[in-house]
Image 1 (tube, rainbow, N blue to C red):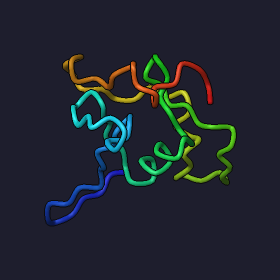
Image 2: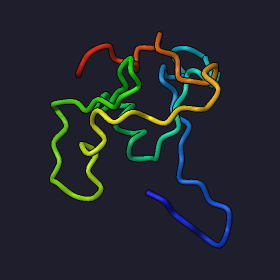
Image 3: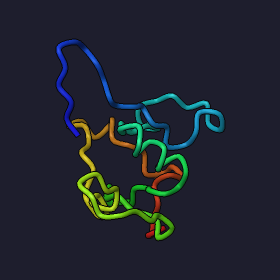
Image 4: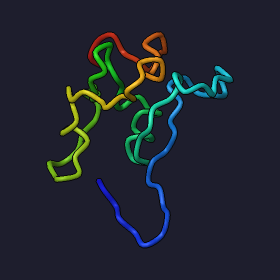
Length: 100
């Protein structure tokens, strides 16, 4: 979702892969940028990212078809920074090896 305004506004959250309360890790590789809805879904285990940086959606996630459906992102590869040293760490619990 792209939002244009006449003033500076961000609709992106910095989402910790491993919660900061557990890891105390605030490094770039322990994070991904998500909109608030996807951030909440990630924190609740409804979505994750596999080892190939594709979105996985839990079978427990039920929703109706719409233009805003989260299921539309299933198996889509996430955009990553150009520099690989800033990519999300694949050694984090939020990075799922298999489908949820």
